[in-house]
Amino acid sequence: REGRLDYERVRDLTAANPADVFDLPRKGRVAEGYDADLVLVDVDAPREIRGDDLHSNCGWTPFEGWTGLFPDLTLVRGHVAYERDGDGTERFGDAVGENVRD
Image 1 (tube, rainbow, N blue to C red):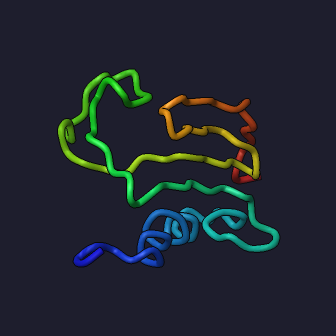
Image 2 (image 1 turned 135 degrees about the vertical axis):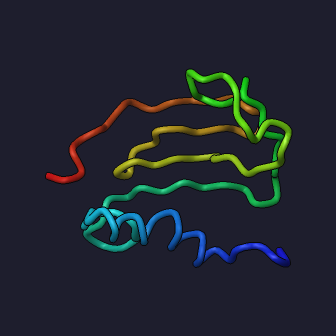
């Protein structure tokens, strides 16, 4: 879209650069030897941001009423952590956490 960040810049700002800054060697890239951490969004399906819809204990957001993109699928180490169907049904996977510094 005109005037928006391109995909490569979003990748760098949200994944590659933070992984480098915080020295997380298996994070921030899609490549052999890296954890399979991915978030997929449909850029053609923006929605209104509503605090009631967010998965937070806070219940509000300063971005209430703005338009944004939301994840359709989140993978953590290759495991489905979150999935949202086209009808809005949400499913959460089992926690697969481990210390990223190990």
